[in-house]
Image (cartoon, rainbow, N blue to C red):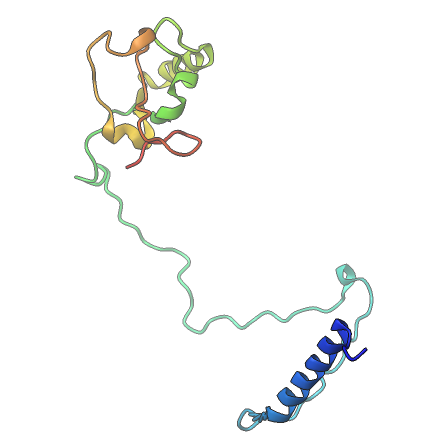
Length: 174
């Protein structure tokens, strides 16, 4: 039997390969040290060994700043408010925005099916403020359109354009 087994030939080939690899490899290493490296020192140990909540160590307060800090700051206020800061608003102005993706759940599908909790909220705000302003649309307001009566199906007053929507809030692409 002149032939060797396959595992034996594989082992010999692997050994020959490793011998050739080790013989032909050559490596160098350079170690760099930081300039002016100081010797290591050991810090003194802590003196208190009890529970941290009962540590008797007291801290010294820092010195008072040499030019003293102002304790009162003068501010000139105008009785009439700041002019041209915004458009004129009513004193009863209160408003909020409802994202288009949840309008049917919050407002209801049309004026005959308005949600009772929403009606109660509007009645409370109207009683206290005099009026309520609601912005419907959130970030989709910029692409909203007013359409003729009867264009939106099922008697709805609001409908979201679902063309090319993405995400869980069904927000249309910009």
